[in-house]
Length: 417
Image 1 (cartoon, rainbow, N blue to C red):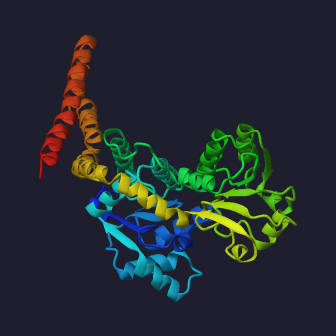
Image 2 (cartoon, helix red, strand yellow):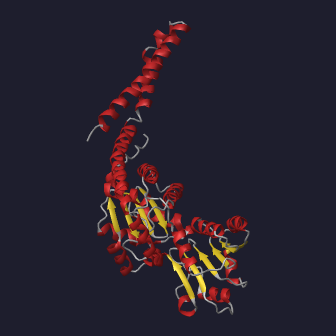
Image 3 (cartoon, helix red, strand yellow):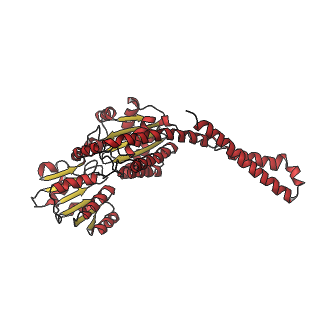
């Protein structure tokens, strides 16, 4: 007997979140998982809390865990969750996480995620990049077999909501992104157009930053990335030079500005590496660090003259951006609430589809028994033309026996309040 598929249930949809609104950016970095450890750690985490599904979303100002799990997100569950999240954590670190986690369940979880995708919960309101980040997080976790039917439906709708908000409101008018905020800060420091840039990491954020710099006539770029091919692709676009990340510690050609954003769990620019990079140059440097956790070791700031542009010191500018878009928030919330109601109907329809998924198979079995057993003798006496007509009649009735009950069941359930 085949296993019955789990029916999607909104009550099982839960979110555990750490965002810029309630958590220091540096503390959010504690929940970053290195790319190479993602599969092992997330699969262990999912199994440890007996979750049916798990999605991990990590951006420059938030880390969120989307779960399909029957248990309530009380302190007992959260303690178990964070104990499994990092086996090296002390009791104090686990307790801090339990006390500071934002938790959402059911409809509230859906509302929160729709708000995230609409960017009204973002550090930079109106930034469209979050939709891509949500989609990429889903695709990655889906490839790792961490997600299932509920999160698939949730993410599909979430992306549609985000697009709907950007299309039908002015929330993204004159869009401001983390990249543009960082660039605005850079320009206020009077960086010269021939400044020597070291770009460390060639992911989405740094690629966008590099294109922004090129657009504004900066010309001198050297790119470092763990995968050399990706560094070479970006370098070709910028007419720059490309090196593997491992070559950073031996780079001695000097720099004026570092732009860094990698997925590393620890500092990429250590005091020892920075010492080699800067050499005997005593001039003040600019570092744009958009990574979570930070790529630049904090100790460097104590020993060198550095103008640091990082996520946490962009928050004030982001608040101004939020105020400028305040009037659009109500329109966004109306779209979100309408989509929550529609999604609940989607789930009811999905329940019908799963419940009725065995009907076609059963109808075919009945047809085969009728033809090969119950009426086998009668069929022997029929000519070819009669058999053909009978077959067409049975096929027609078979389709109706499948489609009519399905439609009736959907009409009944989707009209329930």
